[in-house]
Length: 301
Image (tube, rainbow, N blue to C red; front, top):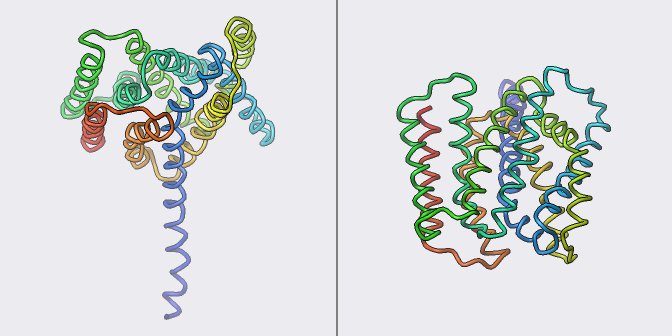
């Protein structure tokens, strides 16, 4: 090996390592997110839906607060608090509550297909929020994905949307709003601080909700219930978003979003492996169709 090659080799490795590290972090985030619905289903074995969501938020806020204190992160500027409130309402409160209520009547595989539309919903709301003008091909793919999900839900529920479907479609909207505002704030603050401060902002409400939920909903502690609660709080709500934002910062949003295309299909795998659900042929077919639609939007927007 020549001296010139020896001198350039460390530079080459240094360029490649951040990409590999960022890809691994983003992929870890996708895996964490894909386990959210199975963990919630386990948590519902021990807790009522209101108690589960409130306790999940309290535990995640405690972890986030510890990180913020340990790193001595200063309070966000006053102009950021309104945006953090939107993130908190959508990601910390709205999405967990609506999906948890949906899972009291729907299977995790059904929910995974419907919520698989989230990247498209987020892209649409982001375009409205920022004034961006995606191409006609983008909107055609987005509408096709929505049509697939609507057809799937109608077929699965006998021709009319169920209460669980209403909760899931509501969850899509509020989470997309939270993601959109979080994406805007992540340009001004580190992404993990955005979700961290949103969790801390909700802590008083979460504590009150935990006290009320535990007082009025029965609790039957078991391994599944506790494991589901801990994962939903530490794994999905904080760790998943932490590594996701770190990975996205290193490899960029376009490349990271390609990894997230696998999330609905991973959730279907977990629903079978962890919950013993039996998938209808329509579930993986619809998930794959939505994946194709999302892949098209990534190519043309």
